[in-house]
Length: 308
Image 1: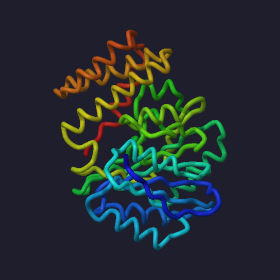
Image 2: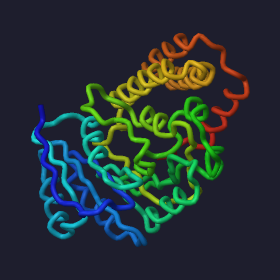
Image 3: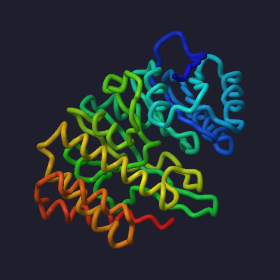
Image 4: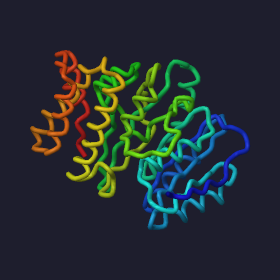
């Protein structure tokens, strides 16, 4: 079992906790943390950085920022690698804020992000999760903004049904949510994809993707979404999560059927072996999708095809 050392932090409960998860991000983490501490806000916040036993100089950068901002920065330092979900859980469980923002250690915040999201949550008590557009970029300089302006998920209230149908609607590093909705309080015994967590966080309220580009999502060879093996692994996580959620919410079987059918068709068209995973979910749903849902998913796919 991993030992965890928690350091630093303000003495009073802040309005916001910014949770950063990192593993071997020495090339990117300093820029990520600088983008957080440079945010202009009118509230107190803390930064909690969880390092999953990095083998590079990631931990040195964490200590650097802890020394620079001792009343703001906490470190959750695992002495052995425990996996991304357990690291996520440990960091978010340590948060003391009314709201919690998540960012991966290789991504960036743009000016105004934190203030904008906190303002929205303060003004809309029924909203449990706020996302925003981000710039996807790679080392070659290629960029695009996602979700695109043509996407139907921007600036609309998204309920559990919508997430069951559409899957992920925005980058995980754009997430801010109400801390009271956090549910992963015990040690994690399995890998959970961010979509599953977000469906649970939306709960009885709604989420919204702000029509504002407030972050940058990095695409690189070491990322979770790079390469055929990673694609298969992430698809397996997503399909397993769909089945978990389906057991909790069988009333959304037609939405799950539509999502899994569309994914099966796309994977088959692109000759991805992962089509068998989504096909299994479709068969398990035991429901026929609505034509309007299929058309909506087709529109989302066409609007958000990524050029990089």
